[in-house]
Amino acid sequence: MKNIFYCFLLMLVLGSCAISTMTTFYSMSKGKIDTPKKESYNVVYQASFGDGLKADVAYTNESGKQTELKEINGAWEKPVTLKSGTHVQLTTFATAKHKSKGEYKILVDGKVVSEYVLSGKKLKYTFAFDLP
Image 1 (cartoon, rainbow, N blue to C red):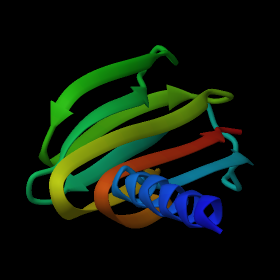
Image 2 (tube, helix red, strand yellow):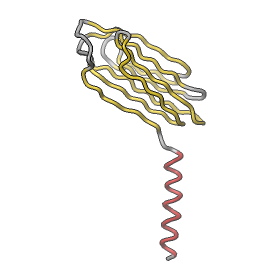
Image 3 (cartoon, rainbow, N blue to C red):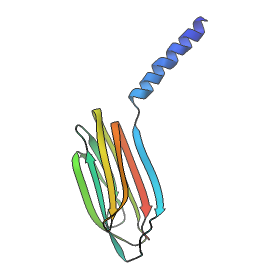
């Protein structure tokens, strides 16, 4: 009986540790988006990191490679022109000392491809797709 009590207590302690370090995340790989094929596309990445959030951001740049930025806060926007057939990805990881909100949006030629809101102390957002 004593061992059962100690096991229960250990599970409770470990469970509370896991909850305090939990990350809120959204991840989606959409494949090829439904838009008319053309030579190039105007892609706009947007993110808004709420009070206290600092984020590392990685996005597909105009050469088709990932560009990484560190400790972004507040509103962030990056327009790029990408060639047909490019694999596009936006990944962010934001942390704060208290619960906060992150808002994310990706547009292709003015049309919203992804729009999402996360809240918590640790936020991870990843969205990927292929241009036709």
